[in-house]
Amino acid sequence: QAQLAAIVDEGLTTDESAKVNSDDGVSRWLLAVDVHYYLHRFWFGGAGIEAAMGVSSWVARTVERLKEKGLTDVVCCFDSKTNHRKELVIGAGWEDKYKDRPPKDPELGNQLSLVYQLLEGAGFCCAKIDGMEADDIMASCANQFDGKVTILTQDKDARQCLSDKCNMLLDVEWSEDETTGDNIPDYKWLSAKQHTEATGIRPDQWTEFQAIMGDNVDGIKGCVGIGEKGANDLIKEFGSAAGAIQSAKDG
Image (cartoon, rainbow, N blue to C red; front, side, top):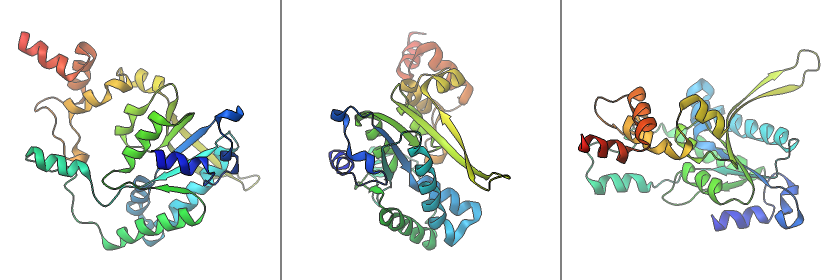
């Protein structure tokens, strides 16, 4: 995070205004992009060998529009080739492996490398930390960045980062204005308040909810026989997974 902050402070982003810091009285706003998520979405959406180019163009277009709203800093976040979570799961002797997925298509791997090169070449700050995922970098930004933070991802795990200073941009859909021919963005925002109103669970309780419900995407089973509604009810009533377990013990 210290290295990332140094890069941002040096102004190595697409926005020259990022060179001014909070000491100058300028409000900082960082966009942290989950590049891996969107590269996979473009790839599996049929973009194929055009995925990297499509993502880099989409990110650049989105950033340019958000700059008009006051965006000052941008970091494009990437997974590293190693993953400390997989090592933890193996060490803990879990029966099911973390993110136990089939090997990547070699071309998908090429696209991941290419999108990094394209974004870095366009002047974006690209962050990759050995052993960590893009999620870890975004969460670190949400916790430590001196200013407002927006996480650009649809990953539900990131909801634990929502706060008064951090929101999520789930997606940006672009359409062409029939009159002017301009590209018009449709932003899908999510705030901590919206999340809590929709789910009944605060962001700081989100990991507790996920621990009970499980996550099929990451290979986490959760509690046998308890689904999304059951997990939701337990967290609402007892506040945490530990609270629910203690209540059951007290019987």
